[in-house]
Length: 102
Image (cartoon, rainbow, N blue to C red; front, side, top):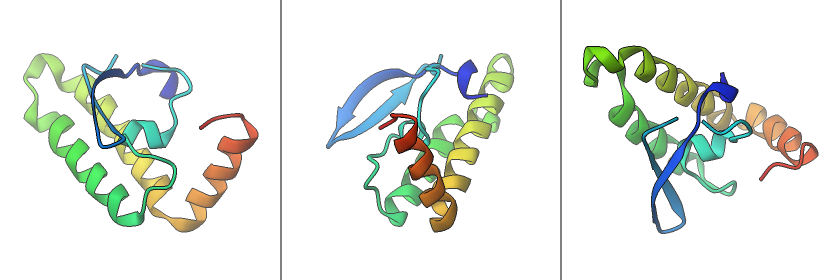
């Protein structure tokens, strides 16, 4: 799934990257998906998840973009599932460091 999505950066706001016109970046980390720094708190992760889901929820898109929005929402959900759980986040951070990611 991650290899199918390319993110196009739109603007930067206080070190938080906001994304639009999602098109893919093979290697995007879950932090990038949610537009967060690696040092983000649990509250920041939750707020970013909610904001992204409000923006990209399939029910808020026209019929021509439903499949696209469903794919994006799935990626956002997966990022939140991993980063919101301290145990899976720690495991993910270790994998990210070992692979040379953020």
